[in-house]
Length: 177
Image (cartoon, rainbow, N blue to C red; front, side, top):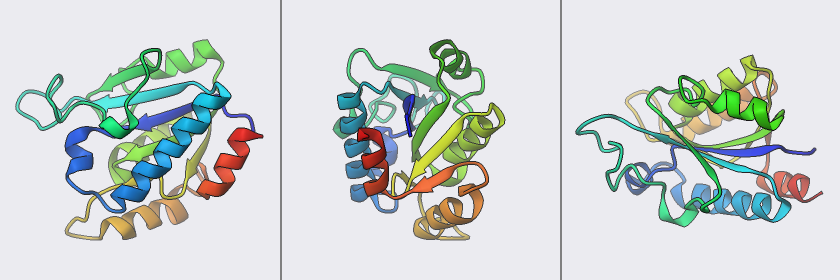
């Protein structure tokens, strides 16, 4: 598979430092994806959520910054969003069209919110979406644990409906092939 872009959603300091499910593995997996894509020349795109004034993800705050372990390189594109979908009023879709992007790797957080909305909108725009297992995360809530949510979305909601879910070892081989 030839991938055209890696899109990393909302891996921001405030969220990562709040200890989402499987944090260490997710950060390490995204670092591995970044390294492989950068070596292969696959464009990396970051998406940052701006929660507005007073929010932990307020534009320009320390919590709003992209987590230090996966910081963007100076030439990597960053889109700022205010909605769950990375496509809504951000220019991301237009940018991807301009670059001829068809096949994307999608990762980041939060599984049931921004990742889900972004995945489904990407599907509607007819991108081929691949989501690596253990490269998305979220928090426990009143209804389910972060682990249950991640597994449910990867295996029951997204896989073979809106995206292809593949293991990390497989995606790294596909990137390098």
